[in-house]
Length: 215
Length: 293
Image (cartoon, rainbow over all chains, first blue to last red; front, side):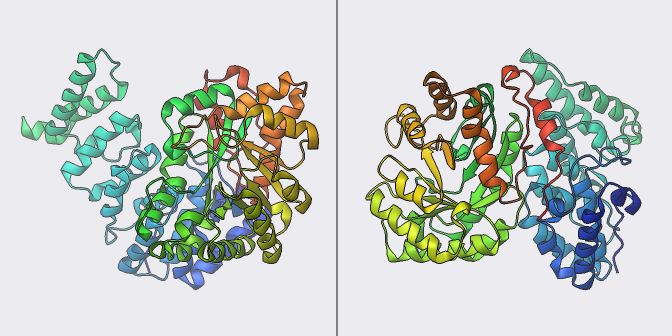
């Protein structure tokens, strides 16, 4: 009952799998379609039963992430938004980093009624750059402005490319610019390199509608 | 020299250690769940620790070009505390995960009834999850503990080749060898084994089914003891291929039985470039297909 946008087309995923792995994906999909509460059972073994690594034909997407998001999509077909969120929270809570990342990607393809911002905040408290990057995807629209700005700053601080931040041009504002300028001053005072992305964020702040409204 | 340390507690080590290990040729390791020095008193302490082993520590190792695996279990010492008994109930959740390559450390500390019960139950889990088992042998009365360990392994139905009995020495090696189990040796600065005694064991009984580890933890220990044992083997006349077998191919063979390794078994021996391009090495590892189960 809840529609989750896939991370990659079904055909792209299936093309990346050999015959045996495709049969495994079909079996896993059948399992969660019949009983969505099996999602947490299928998640841990999903990568080793199908495959992992960069997915050909989908820029920047990992095969294991695409497979796991497709399982969430299959489970979501018979879950209302609230039930889906509850299931995703369980999977995230007990997932390893790869499973957690896949949940964050699934949230990024979820409709408005699904608000998993608590999971994003959990991911942003970690220093695992893969989780931080996934948390700043499309679902980060649900984050309040303070949390979102801290997320952008954390990307700069931990080296996550800000290209992966959704809505930078739209949400960058004067307050973010001030935070980033303070960060830059700190780097310069310490004689350290300033990441190139600092200027990318400052440019976005200067050009954003928010900034023009404030000035 | 490419090195797979089959037993090291990286949670207790520093980033300097990771750097030094990579420079010495370590490209993969197994971190067994164990006692943290300070006894735990609740289930939550264990689940947070297990989460770190499949989460943060794996990420931390990856930053240094090292593939991190772990084993999960209720260790023998804390099996004696009734407040930790419910840990056994949450183990299945973790034993299903990628990179969890064995059930361990299980075994005996003080040879109590509670320890034996937890040990036997966890050997059952190894059978159920088709995972190898890593068995710790006691520091005190090691010979008797090893004997009872082997009896329990036989009773469990777990194939001897799926079991490594660890922290062995000259006194306990032969009974484990005869049982057909893998033999683990921890090379320490001043307890357990040292690299020269290790070489003598290898000269006497060969390289088959032997795992050499640093077992480095929060105590006085040395994460480079694997590399130092490799050097001692070369100095004693073993070939580079012999060293590669003990320090790389043997752990790959043993833990590969889990179907959960996250490292390329055929990873090139690029230790001569060690430290120069850790990220590239890791990227090379990270695109591996998982083995199927």
